[in-house]
Image 1 (tube, rainbow, N blue to C red):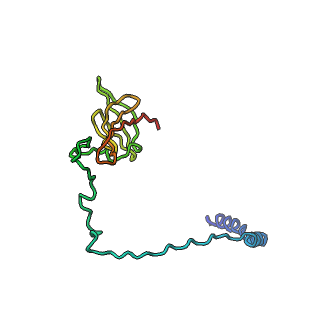
Image 2 (image 1 turned 135 degrees about the vertical axis):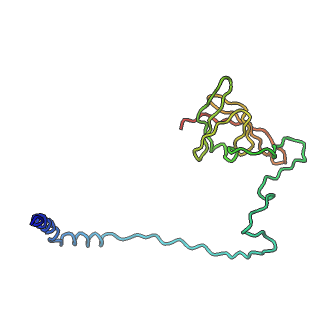
Image 3 (image 1 turned 180 degrees about the vertical axis):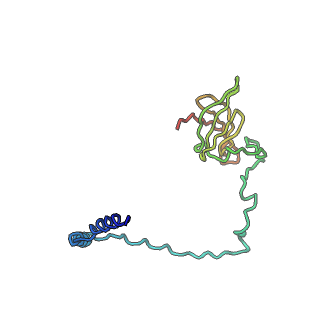
Length: 172
């Protein structure tokens, strides 16, 4: 008996769903007739080019390349500016300078350090003499507005040249 009013109200509400639908069906039919689907033609599939793998002349694709193939090959026999390849690289030397942002500075007495954010969101504290960037960039000067970096870039003849770059304070 308690559920009788609830049952009656549900029957009453559901009865509103049953009714004349001819105007709705007419609208759907005319809309489908007016609209034509425009599907662009599929792109031509690229032609498959077979590659014959010759085991004798190529390295195995399942073995990592040897160290000589992946390291920088630098001719140190010339008497000119060369980077120190025996120096252990820092974490910030895996990022291009375009992927680094100066976010601020820290200081204690006369010492000043810069806060540098990498493209993956990590923030590092760096000071004068530390390295960053892909071209053996050494920090020459840290100010509250910028970091002065001396990079060593190859000149194409086996020697290297120094280039000065700045990493300016970025608020974004």
